[in-house]
Image 1 (spheres, helix red, strand yellow):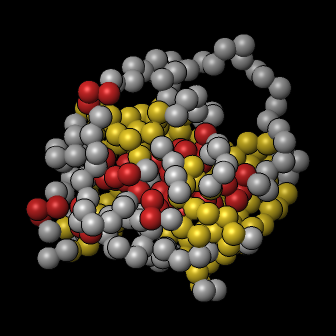
Image 2 (cartoon, rainbow, N blue to C red; image 1 turned 60 degrees about the vertical axis):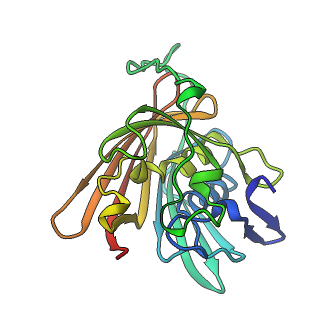
Length: 263
């Protein structure tokens, strides 16, 4: 099935395409972030815009059926708060908090965007991501559910990088993912794109959260990730990411990172 999840009544069943690179029985952070986005979108009223998503990964999200909860609060005439949780066997493993704004009539005849346009690299620079820790015996999200084209850097060159990425699977089987679902799935890859430690070092940096502030909806499937990771001296760090489509900037993301030894 070419999707990250199968909807089964009030359950979401993850497929192998949602698997992460660190443990064979746990999901990558991107799929649950996209699923939480979809749950909150279902709470969002017409003419409202999810301006910010904050996702917390509270535990490794298992490759087992997930239940969910959602809530919506009206904070003011134009501002709403929404929340969603994913649960495994009754335990909350991931949650999201969203700020939702009621949109006005168009203010600009054209977007005042000044950073674009950006040129999508050709297929000749498209590369499959490495398997990383769990090896080649398993399907993984970052390898098989995402296409990667490098503008600056590559998987073997640690440091800041620019990579175009496309989610090539549906989030929920039978549903076309929204632009913001695609953004949330791909934004979680930024710390891997800009990793400053190679696997040969014996260490990796795992994110426990993901914050994305949206400028506007993306146009097209390919998104440009311009990411930088900075590490502190005691095993923590931050990844900052600017996401663009071919027209210009669409969102800004951050991840806080925690070091892990694989020795």
